[in-house]
Image (cartoon, rainbow, N blue to C red):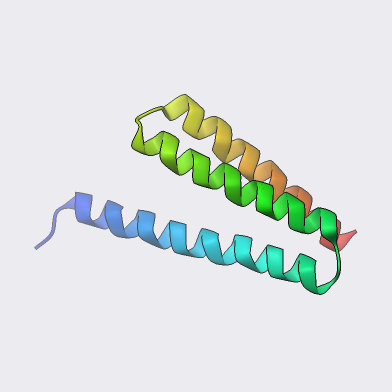
Length: 84
C-alpha cells in the first residue's frame, strides 16, 4: 500500500494536467474566435503558472502564491475577453 505522499503526487499530477488542458483550451478558443487579447492573457497565465511551478520546486511559497494569483487573474481576464 502507498503512503499519503503518493496520493499527493497523483493529486498534483491531476491538477497540472487539467490546468494545462484548461489553459490550452482558453488559448485555442481565443485563437478560434480571433480574440488576440484573450490569447495573450491565457499565454501570460500559462507563463505565470510555469514560473509558480519553478518557485515551488525552489521552496519559495510566497513567490509561488504570488504567481498562482497572477495566473488566476490573467486566466479570468482571458475568459472575460471571450464572454464579453
